[in-house]
Structure formats: C-alpha cells, structure tokens
Image (cartoon, rainbow, N blue to C red; front, side, top):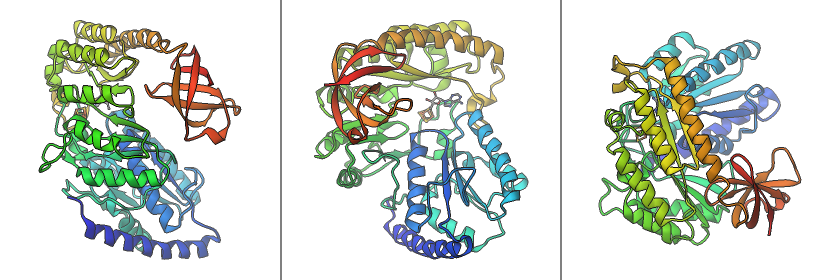
Length: 469
Ligand code: 5AD
Ligand code: SF4
C-alpha cells in the first residue's frame, strides 16, 4: 500500500539533511560531492534516480565521480555472480581511497544487500562501509543518510525481509529530461528456479493505476514524452488489485495522457502474454514496436526444470502471432546457457527457436549459481568449459539473425527520438527508433528530446546511419 504518512516523515528528514549539508559546506569550504554508481537492470536505474533525487534536494552536488567525491553510493545487483564480484572489487578500491581521505562516506544498497551472506561479509570484513540498506526500505534513504552523518563512527545496517508499503512522490532526479522509467509493479512471484530476484525483491505488488497515471501526467508536465513501464513481469499487472485494470487496459489509459508520445515496457513473461495485449500494441500509435520476451531456453525439459510454464512450441506460436499481427516489430530476448543438466541437444532446441523467431537482439548469459535458489542445489551443474562452447554456438546464431533483421528497415523513413550527441562525432546525433534500434545522423543538440523523421540509408551492426528528412 502507498504510505502517505511515511512520505511526510521522509520529507522532514530531507529538510534535516539540508542542515547536514550546510555543516559539511562549513567543513569542506564547498558543496559536498557525491557519486551514485548503478549496477544491473532498469529497475535499479530507476531506484538510483530516487536516491539522486533525495541527495539533490538535500543540497548535495550529485555530479561527483567515484574517484573524486565525499560520498559514494553503490546501488548493487545480484542476478549473476559477476555482478557481486564487481561490487567487491570496487569496495576494495574504496578501502584504499578512504585511507587517504578519512571523511569519505560509503553507502551500499540494492539487491545484493538482501542476501544474508553478503551482509555477514560486509559487517565482518568491510567495516569501512558506513551505511547498508536493502530494496524494501529504499524510501527511508533520507532518514538513514541523516543517521549516518549523525552517528559518524558506527556502521549502520538496515535490511528488511519484506514490506507491503511503498512511498511515492519523493523527489526524483531523472537521468534524461525527455524519457523516464515508471514502476508499475514491484517484486516477482514466478520463482524461476535459477533466479534470485523473487528472494531479493519480494512478492509481486501492482501499483494502483490511478497513481501510475498521476505520476505519468506529472512527468509530462516536466517535459517527458517517452515512458518505460517497469515490472519483472508486466503481463501479470493488476493481479491482486481490487477492481484493477489488467496490463492492456493500463496501456490504454497511459495512451490517453496527452503529452506522452511513446510507451515502452519491460519485461514480458511469455506465459502471461495475452492476445489482448498483442491487439492493443497493433492498434496503438504510441506503444513502441518492440517487445522483450525472455526465452531462457528452447528445450522443453529445461523449461520445465526452470519452472517457466511454456514449451518450445507454445513460445514459437506466440512469437509468430506477434510477428504476424504487428509488422515491423522487433523481438528481443534473454537466454541462459549452462543451466544444470543442460546437454548439447537442449542447446540445439534453443538455437532452433533463435533461428525461427529471428530475434532482433538477444542477451545471452552463462548460468550463474545463486545460493538459495532450487537450481543451485542440483548435483548436475554443468562444466564451465562445456557451457562456454555452447554459449558461443548460441551467440553465433543470435548474431546471424540479428544482423539480418537489422538491415530490414534500410531505405525506409522512421521516426527517431533524439537522445544525445553521437559519442564519436559531435556533428551527429543519436536517436532511438520505435523498434529500439539506434540511428546516427547529422544534427545538433537542439534536436535532443524531439522526435524527427529519418531516412535510414545504411545498416551497421546494431544501428543505422541516416539523414533527417
Ligand atoms: N544465471 C544466469 N542468468 C540469469 N538471469 C537471471 N538469473 C540468472 C542466473 N542465475 C538472466 C535471465 C533474466 C535476465 C534478467 O538475467 O535471462 O531474464
Ligand atoms: Fe526472475 Fe523469473 Fe521473476 Fe524474471 S520472472 S525476475 S527470471 S523469477
């Protein structure tokens, strides 16, 4: 439930933090600088905007760099082990930095902190970390940060098992002026057997549609024209809400918001994707022609062991229906290779699906054993070298069909939302097409945040080169 009382409390703590910042200015002779470092997915990126919002409102300079700041915040991910390793690597560097600069404050939060083993490790071996909190109490960031500065020499650790509450309307500092993520639900109930997310993000909770629309309307007042609706499984949006809307109905409400020109969403679980959603997408001018539809595996046996609730055949049927109903749609996916018990024959099934669906892009991951998940307890973990060989086979198949798909729009004129100047040529800008492909074309910074027609004349690997029409 949305908790308005807590909102008032946290706003009071932001006011108190303003005094803290004034005190720090006296000490440093300048505004304290902080850096928010984000690991992981779009959800985490959105959480970091919430953290930055509090910091900015309190008066911190949020443009600091990791190696040159007074306060650093790591918003962590734990979906795969290499994400954890990276965080520990960064912490090692910070330990040395803090020796030279004792006033440096270090905060870590996010999914990794919801694992008990991590907390034990940090409280024992990383005592120089000043504040640790988790995913469920992120809305208490202002209060926790205030306490951290008040109780200067002790490590504060505040981790909750779960929560039914969420607090909206705290200040948010968006990374982009013209686009924004919007959480429509939190948590996940699917318990795919490899995945740690349900354990660290808790049970699925949908936000009330009216609150979501109100947030989007406010975003448009502030210049946003593209929203990305965020949830671990957006297709099950609304379950558990009294008289709530389903996901298609929610999309139709979002479409009615005047200032919104483009709508994206992430992520769709294949088992819950309805025909209604496909028709809603087909009929809409605003919903982008892109769907991210994680396959994970093409083998029925592995899919069953993963607890995914679909088969190779039903997935292919679904993808066909989407391609046939929505011409020009881009389909992207996630694939895991090396799940316990996986054989070459299973991977062949995955490659079959890749070739059949012709993904526009796919994120491929080597299975990572996550403590506490059912798959981690299995005795038939696969050999690393074998997984690597299979991974390369899948990647080859993905590259082949993606490069074929990525030529499909050459010669056509498409609308692009200009996102930035091009990295390697300041006389060019980079825009995003409805299907999520990028396009580079001549233009200047005045175009950023506008939608313009572009003639796509050349295809590169995962991008196009074009001319504004
Ligand atoms: N190992 C490898 N990949 C994983 N993913 C989730 N859990 C694991 C894991 N244990 C991948 C899935 C998911 C994406 C976000 O991360 O493909 O869709
Ligand atoms: Fe993890 Fe499956 Fe939930 Fe996605 S749907 S977050 S893979 S448990």
